[in-house]
Length: 350
Image (cartoon, rainbow, N blue to C red):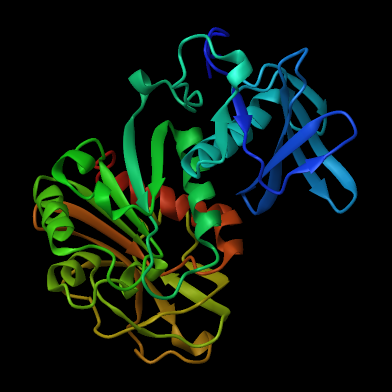
């Protein structure tokens, strides 16, 4: 990550849960990364111009503390903790991107020098990015509490694997121009009717032009009255039992999203039943063993993850990902990464 020139406006976080000391005002932004909650604390110190700290706590204990001396989006000093400065900066970059996406920072008026539109330094050099994806999280019905964890995990995967991740709940991005720069669009636990007819038409054109679609968990509980979308995602959600442990059987270990997985994968999640069985319309990657949990209604053939080519584009779906803990699971992260790479056209399926 290259530092922004100091002539640019430096980053300072808005007061969000603002706390103060006797001398320095502090603004705190919290974000999730791999199942942990980090803080970025902005300290306004006028003589020096301000500093940011990346902090990880466990109760009253501080596990990680690092300092951004110039509030330029890059940590300069690791004060405590067992991470390398490079690893701490990867985490910090995710936090900076989330803060920017959520409007939780503003430029420092005392450090402006005629360039007031400074944005955080991206986690990658755009010239070397492999590709860019859009993560769409709008909900019109049930909203999963794990959505922020999902966003953070996808952003972290992007940092580690050299692709850009833009997250939004603004359906207005679904236009020909708005989707043009993305190799894949991820519906992360969306629900009910999230796009109007104009936006739906734009998304159909995007897929027909060779775009990619990734559906995660609640994406199958979206747009029940839009038959094209049902065909894209593969099947619509019907119901689910309570969260419990079950066994996923990987039936195709050649796909990028399943190569890292064991053939019998035991995990805890919310297990979806679907209105129809998608087999025959999609390539099934994994099924649920209904003998290992209570509440399955699809019998011996219960697809839970799949992919297919559809209407000119590529589509990949996994029903996993209800819990926040899922996104801290390295196997689930590998599952998502392979699905994204397939949908983006970066790797092929066998």
